[in-house]
Length: 165
Image 1 (cartoon, rainbow, N blue to C red):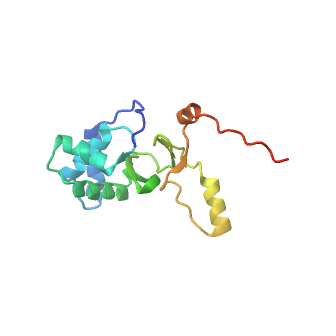
Image 2: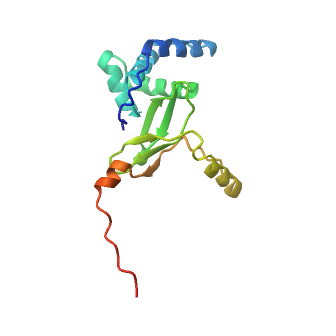
């Protein structure tokens, strides 16, 4: 589920300090598990499953239970620090949004690569769905499915069918 590194590094200490302030404003505290999850997300580029986050946390502290990681990811999602995306086949991925807005994603159905899409890309579609169907679309919650550029260029073109006479 990981995307290729973008070269952006995040300072885990600064991130933990900033989120600690946000938690304090809400009357919550920074736990060791929260700090470990934030550190793992800050050191890892891409979109990670909860199991991948747990593995990254456990590499530094094997005593952290997977349930603590799941609860922490959920809490950080509600805080607006982490975005979760539902991917194909029921998988969920998480990544830091760190000062950014929640945004839509696309996932390649061939290789599984997850791509960040621009904020607002689907605004017109969401407005149309609301106007025509009364349904409020949450475009940042689930990934669009398709084929990435790399997979599209390596796949053979489908055989053309003769036109009916």
